[in-house]
Image (cartoon, rainbow, N blue to C red; front, side, top):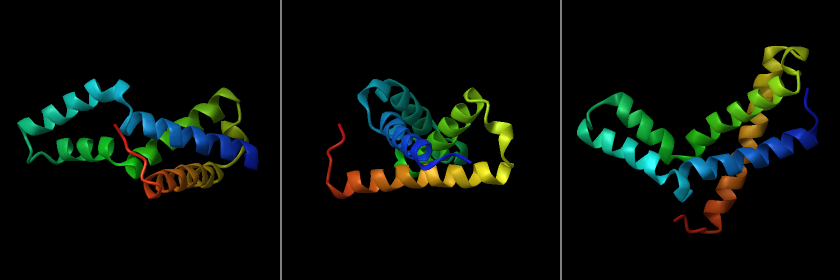
Length: 113
């Protein structure tokens, strides 16, 4: 199981990765393409799900945190050292910290441009 330092760093990275995916202007062209794709068929549940994912810090944060955790565990050679359920708990911890930071960010009224 990861120690608190690693979980905290992964949570911070999850928060930043989520901000990048949902708010940062560098990814505006990619998000705009997905929004335009959705506009062409608004009744599509797949397209609506994609727009929801890229618009929601909590939805995107879950997947970004999971991807970061999996990448870290695989790169460190630690994926097979613990049962899968332990990694599931780690995922919840990393995503939970990222959500707390995103909630704090929203509460402080940071303007996303």
